[in-house]
View (cartoon, helix red, strand yellow):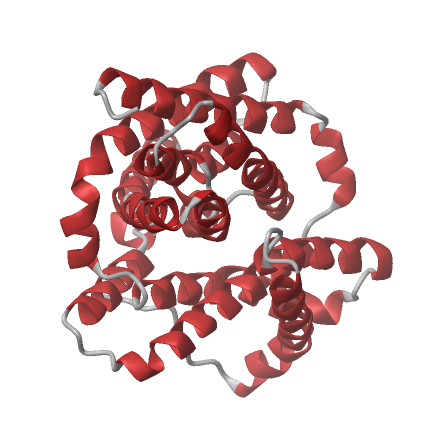
Length: 345
């Protein structure tokens, strides 16, 4: 089973060092600013800073190799590190009761992304990124599927920025709407956990409503986050089938294998989660592992921002933002509708 490579030749290290150092430096600043502005969070600050540096200062070619490495390999390491913070037995025990709502909202998100994206003329990879980010867990889900579908960096940056825009709106709007609708603590927790994308935003909205709502929303969010695994595997198989057809048309079927596109880092994510579930990670070091995972994903998303071309993003126009808005509203409404149908409101 192949893990993301940690070994590089001295020449590769020299090529990658400038770009890596740039991404790490900006990522560290984003991490600190994220502590100061938790509603925005380090990941979105990192990608915004990366975009600003790329388009205002235009780092030279010597930075390209390290930035590309951080945007791909460090991205995979960050997903594996996240696994050490996810206890599968806890999620299985407490999250099954929310699974029906989660599955419905996920289905609605993907259908809305496909139908609305087709109507708006948004291309397939950006539709997938926005759909996955809205359906599962925001930037983390986008980060997980990026190595599989291999979109352009500006598409990834645009999708993450769009998702986090609506995360911020949700944090401010959901508690107010929850009180207006007189939702119970568990009802609001289930709504926030299934309809808000990023974990930090779910926690912020849930605990601003009540302690019980925050606890429940966090558990629901953990359940939802585990679904990135089957989604990634389905996407990998879909991409593999498309590549196989492409090679068949070109008369080079023998040059393609599923192993070349399979997301091996997801299996290592499962191993990491299993280690956490088995209690093999001392409690004392768990906060440090969580901080490391957060920092790695900030560095990776910063690198994606450093690769983003604002001119290409501007060429996409308002349609991706409208797509993100439409999918987000569809998910929020469907979550409430399912709760009403099953009598949990």
